[in-house]
Image (spheres, rainbow, N blue to C red):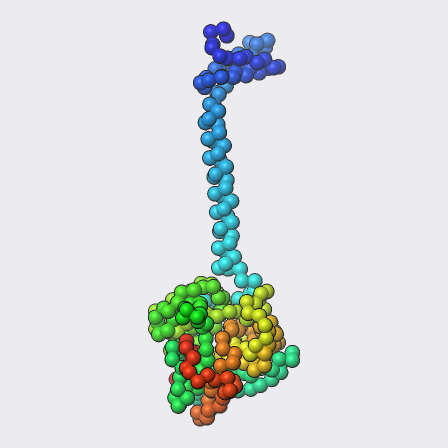
Length: 314
């Protein structure tokens, strides 16, 4: 053992440890004091300290990448799949509805009113109509228009909030709002999703599409509403088993929660928010008779910038 430089021999029971102070050394030793038949050969490989630290750092970096990757994957999955409520209609099912031919019927808006949980609600059932989205407010004299309303929000900088498609042209691409409305020809749908399958279908078939806040999904209220305070409210909703959509108005100031809860109590399963609770417009009953929606005193002298959701006779 004296021929090996810088090697320290440590004897402890039946093992020999060889430690190198400088360069890695591979050494084979024989454990002394054991019978020849049980002689054990021990090979010790010593790694340079710098290489050992490099391996430790590399392992730590890999572990961090795995943790951050898993965190990002879970966050993305929740963003696209976990809405906190059940979903009654998938985008694929709504696309199938948009593909179906709508049976023509007499165009009209059937208006009813009721009070639910202390909240007054006006219901406008849409029959025999097709939807478009327009940037200019319809004229009062346009007898083809049976109801119109605000739809997507717009910022002070004239930026549309939420995805918006008009006649197959994309005006905005924004998935931040879960609710959506889609229309192609005479078919109309609403739904809840982060995915833009319905939007893409509307683009491909020169349809119309916008996004808004979710109010109801599968008869369930969201855990959080993003608009607060009490103001007049509007929404578009649907009932189970009824292919017609409803335009819904709360003419008195209500919170988002109270408005949504009242719609749920009345039997609506899905509903999305419509901006412009004080907006004054009109609707037409069978035969084209015109009626006022909202308070005409709130109607501004100058035209309100769109987009407008317009329901015309087919």
